[in-house]
Image 1: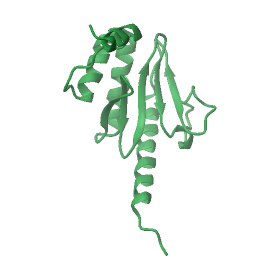
Image 2: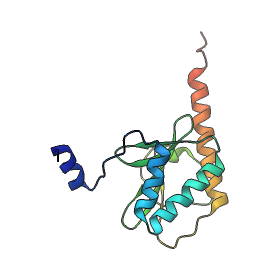
Image 3: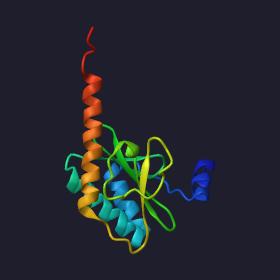
Length: 149
């Protein structure tokens, strides 16, 4: 066993399968969790895909599911007592139904912590996801516009 493998095992990280796609890594994480957190992450993932069929799944930062469309929309971190959905530009999003309940103090990100037994307001979450996509798309279009003289 190499030092890197030992370090990964000590940190609780698993060796990533060579050539696995981000979607396959997310599938494996859901299966690996095998409890309410896996079910919650799978449900969140499904809602994201329904809200934005063009979403791109990524696997970053040694094992964090990330959903992108013209930039990061959100991440899906799993912890012992919470599944955290962090919106990269959450502070810039309108949240009329007060879904954001975590990371409220920062200037950029906002998060939704889901605990065991929590119900998801799918309509409000889809609206928030679509708003995040629109923000990313607008920002990308603005970067591409030529600057006027």
